[in-house]
Every structure is written in C-alpha cells, then in structure tokens.
Image (cartoon, rainbow, N blue to C red; front, side, top):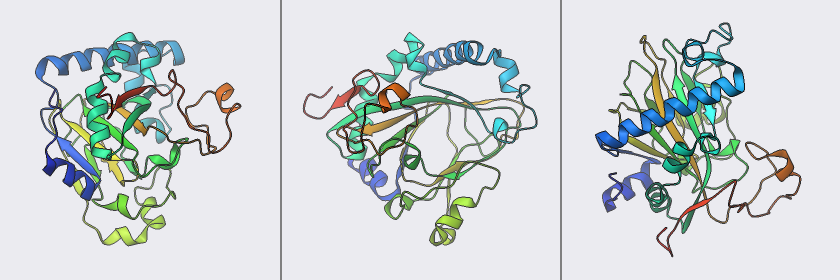
Length: 273
C-alpha cells in the first residue's frame, strides 16, 4: 500500500480539498479489495433486498426511479463481512486520512460500496459532511477505484478549494446536477476538475469539498469502495444518519461520538495506530 505522504501531497490536499494517490494499492491488494467488495455486496443485497448481484446492477427492482440508477449503495459492510472489516480497519488508511486532515486521531464513520451500474445516471454535485451526525471541517473520505474510473463511466469531479468557503448548507443528490450551485452561486465561476484514474487509485477528499460524478455511458459497472472518517473528539449534532436509533436516544447534542463498536478509532497520532 502506497500510504506514505509527501509534503507536496499534504499541501495540495490542504489547498484543493482532495488528493489523488496513484498506485495506492498494488495488484495483489487490488484483487483482494475487488473480491471482498463483490462478495460483501452480494451478501448484503441478498440479505437486505432479496436481489442478486446482476439484478441490482441492472436496476430491475425499480427501473423507473432516477435515484436507483445513480448507484448501487451498500453501507457499513464491515459490520456484516469479516473481510471488509479487515480492510476498513487497516491503520494505514487511518494514518493517511488523519495526516491529510491534520488531526490527532481518526475514527471510522461508515464504509460504503458505490457501484455505478451500466448506463447509470450521474451523481449530482453535493457535500458529504452535512449529511452526517457530526460537523467537522476536518472530516475526510476515501474513494477507492476498483475499476478504471474514466470520463465515460462516471469518474469523480471536484470544485478545487470549495471546502474553504463551504458552509453546512447542501443540495440533495437528485436529478439536477447544478442544484448545489444555487446554494453556492460563487462557485459557478470556478473551474471544475475531473479525476479519471486507474483501478487501485485512492482519492481522498474533505467532507466539505464539492464533488459529483458523471454518468456511466458503458455497458459495464464502475465499482468503488469508500470510507468516511470522523476526527476523534467529534460531537453529536442531532442528526441520526447511520447511527442506530437505540444509540441516538442516549445522546444529546454535543456528546462526543466515541463508541468503539460504532465508530472505532483506527489511528492515533500519539500511538501511531
């Protein structure tokens, strides 16, 4: 795993709000990530929706829903698949995320498989952190390309530097690509950047960096495995998001989110782990 960061990379992330790391996974690691993700997603779809893999990818369950054709989404696979647990709890991932974010500790918020199906719809511009149960200008996400991500199959796009002026206002992921720019009209004049990348590339982005993805114009799926990270010490903002309702009922706004089962600490600057 190519997890050692240079000062140039750290500075680039700080300025732009995202960083592309080529060859992050070696060929053996990439095949493991692919195999684990495929099995974990297939198990989740069968258990949760009664769908098989091929049916879900081709959106046969709800063919008339725009949102269903954006991506097949499976959240918190590490909770139900040991192989995914092992991948997501790798402290090297936490070290990269924590170093880029400039924080002393990183907790997992949630992992998430995002698979854009053949001829899938685009993912409209949005921010990540406003959806979550904590607010932090240092929140960060990993997006791992499991297939080559191209301009033709829905690679990521970013508005560089948008994390510096973003608020907690957001736009939903829906039919209109440009809704976020109604919320932030000052970003309309900024140049956007596409991030086509080979499989095995890791892209890290700030939770307040504006991003989206194009449509998949090919007959093949575009697979990605992602993980959202929460800086250690972050507090509850009143939104449930992925937290269990039984846990939410025990919280009040301002409580620190440090449950080791729900939000495990995978890296600490002091301990190095």
